[in-house]
Length: 191
View 1 (tube, rainbow, N blue to C red):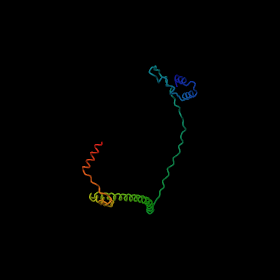
View 2: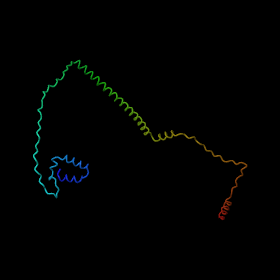
View 3: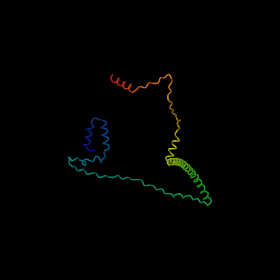
View 4: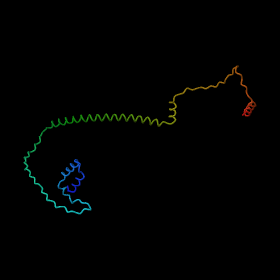
């Protein structure tokens, strides 16, 4: 870190021990590459300063101990097994038996699923066929069936019987039109 940057940081953190510790840790992490950037970064108003010539970097030489080579042994030879025709046939039957059992259980499960699906589809087809037949019936038959399905109401008979007069009830007196006219005129005059 260059001196100017270090001085500015110390001014900012002066008096705060926690910040001073962080600045000290930052300085510890600054290496030669970061410390030698003075003059490389500049602002427009600063004059250009030539960077000092860098010291040649000497790479350290690392000596390693010679590797000890162990001889590689030959890979193991694969085991050879000779089988006659009868042994091959017996082995094939055992393998086929195990495979056939697994496939048989899978096929049985698939067959059950297929049977359930077919039964479900047959039920739906039956329902749809019944609906189609119902839609194809002529309108007259449909109305006739609907009327037949309606509940029957009991018929109510209505009979007219004229009132019979008894001896106690006097015959009503019929008013003449002249009496009605006189009563109307009397009502108009009083109003």
